[in-house]
Image (cartoon, rainbow, N blue to C red; front, side, top):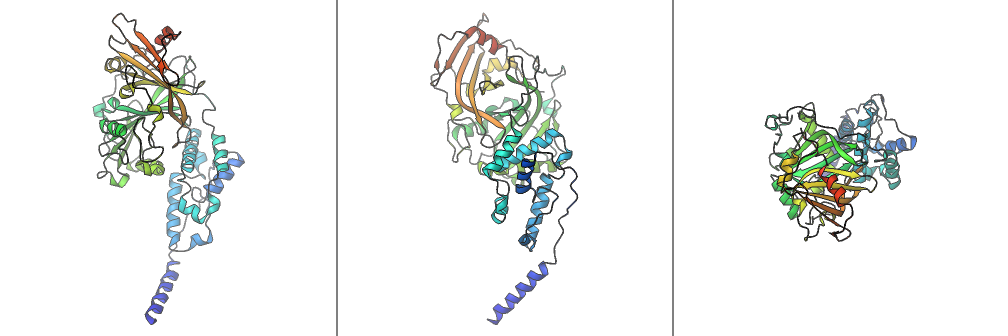
Length: 445
């Protein structure tokens, strides 16, 4: 009993001494608070400012050591990633993108941190809070910039992909990325971009077999982004090339970054992103909410089923077996969105068609040779369950094929309706054939 008393006294003494080890949490002045309507600011102040602002908002129990050390670390880390007290000094596009990311984190339940809301229930994000933020951001409320012609690639020689510098964290550029198979496509209303998400053979086979929990070592993803442009036809097409991002799976080599190597190369010269190797913190933090899906946001289009909900996209893969070709195994040439019908379409091509399309050639209208086959798959859209402000393919609405013949006439076939049955008497076949053959390939540097 005496020994227990001594231990208790020692523990109390240590606890008291710990209270004197109390490093400060800086509280610099608010220099540029984000500009937003009062109801939006109220939600952000209630749910986010405790960690993501210069305002020091600690409950009395947050001040007690050793828990205070964890609170301090969380606050300083949170401010580094997002600080609403200084966000207003950044360009409007950056402020908007930051808010979209914040809402996506809230929607997935990743922010505020569950351990924080367990002790601070007032900071929980309610459905009403989310509704206010989403209504304020309102993706797709304005159309992308209009153009009389889709922006061409400047008349310069294609960049030497073999000479692209590695990322600042050492992740190498993979010059073969453009030959990888499509896994999915994203219409980003939060920043008016399109994304092709491609996978190398290992990733593509894993998606088709459902072996993605986790993704196998050797899997590689390329996420290619273009700015959106509204064409004269009222459709939204890929315009200016923006960047390509790579994720390389090697659980041993990249064990400190969730098993993935991360890289981003921007612009027509594919310049590595960031000021130094610490940029990778942006990647790992952003992907943390999908940790259960092995840090992958993309729902691959596949007939296989995942072990978890909303990790694969089965509905978009529902093409009947009786089609003359199965285009989802081909490579993509371009995509577009019809905002009037809320559909998105991807143009696929067989080997001959892809060679003619050549996304690095700068040709606006390829001449497809005999033997080339094009397939335009159109889906209705649905909201991306992982990212607020994005839409992804849902149920197929139609599949159109053009088989190019030696006389350049070409054979047009269309499959549509709920069962994607062949429409043998489609009245606009000639116009559709001309439209599809005239689509501009999405350009690469």
